[in-house]
Image (cartoon, rainbow, N blue to C red; front, side, top):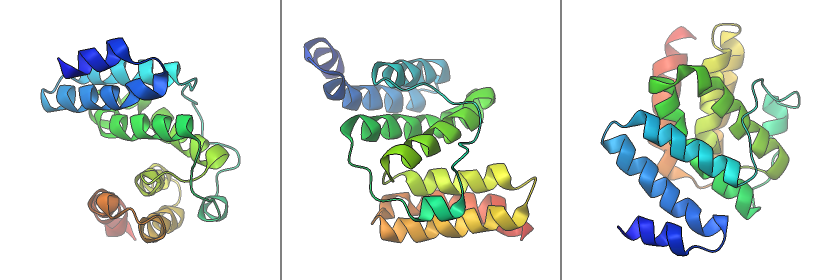
Length: 171
């Protein structure tokens, strides 16, 4: 009920995003994956972002490691929504998974690193795994470095799960 009040009373999109994130988490807990994706995609569109279907041309380990912190409030909100969609897409909408990861990375390249960027970076390692395990490992290492640099300890367990479970065994 509180979320409905926030959504109806909010005057600007940025005021609605925390409510969207709450809705996403509630629907995830209820295993209502279609609702999660619908809310996240609508929020992303409302913020003025759309999914990109390919890896950003500027994406490299060196480029990403040199990025500053993200400060743009719309980009921060979009990155937060994308982070909350990533696992759901992997499980329920695999056709959107890579696009969500690539969009998150595109936003980071354009606006800087979000606290959840280490998870995106480690996930890029998983996407690179089938073509180049060396590159996958380097993406994973960068993700671990970014956790420290961004003081993003709340993402360490997720980053290590991706790195240790999907990349490290193949190195």
